[in-house]
Image (cartoon, rainbow, N blue to C red; front, side, top):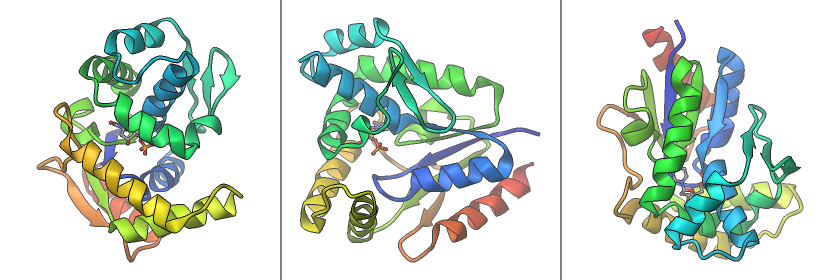
Length: 218
Ligand code: DC
């Protein structure tokens, strides 16, 4: 039996790495919904459209072609933007653009359509509460802001990207606040989600915990 798995939580809690590993173990497809909001933010930035100009942003979404590949690659009108959307300035712009209800509506519809045949792992902020309310397994993955900042700092350093711990920590706290307090679909744990604190766990340990939960369902 193929199921859908929803993984929500704040930024840098390990959602992407955990989802990738789970997808590999289960032979499922991982969809990084944060990458979708990042792509829209990147598109708005390229066209000089303000992130809160809802109608213009939606029109950009409708008039451009996105491809979200199962290996995490993102193409915009055929151009590979996978690296560009990971830049720190796009993180905040993605959080800003995600506040708009019409933008969320457009992306949620795409996400639900992609996951309709089951066998998907979606990670984001509103997967268990809005996008896949009926997901068979829901996980709320969290960790302290300090642990998450350290993780992001080390990832950036390893990739040769800008790495300033204090700046990353500040940005994580601002984005947490914004994502948890917006009016539409704020980040929150679904009532039926299992909460896992990844602060003191390796990715493998988190994945093992989720595999136990999945095994009971299938
Ligand atoms: O997961 P991420 O850090 O790449 O996501 C970037 C931003 O996109 C995040 O700050 C909030 C928004 N987002 C959202 O509102 N809903 C989702 N399902 C995924 C991301």
